Image (cartoon, rainbow, N blue to C red; front, side):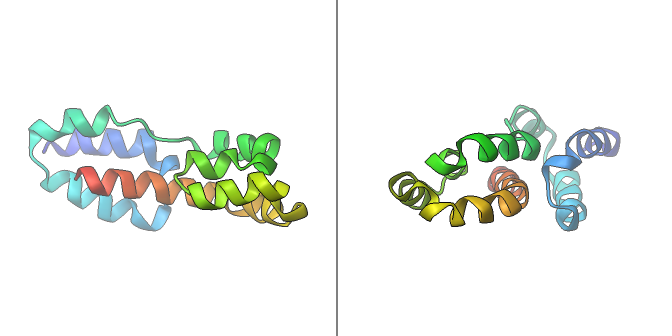
Length: 111
């Protein structure tokens, strides 16, 4: 894979991945065949900032958990209205980190 393409991709999307996994991701992208880069670059990543806003406004209903694939906890939050706000407040503090991990896992499955 062309190092310049990989560097541009990493620079454009580094906010969507955990900082400690950027080097690993870069190494895997450099070792990846050129044909797969179109698949990688067309993958839709979730924005951590957008997920925080969704969590702030719709977190009590579990929408943030549903969007990140945590259906069980999403249903729990929906039925209990965030366990009287406790789960909602925890999610406000952790949703950006969980979104970055979700994006990394999605990318790791492709690579």
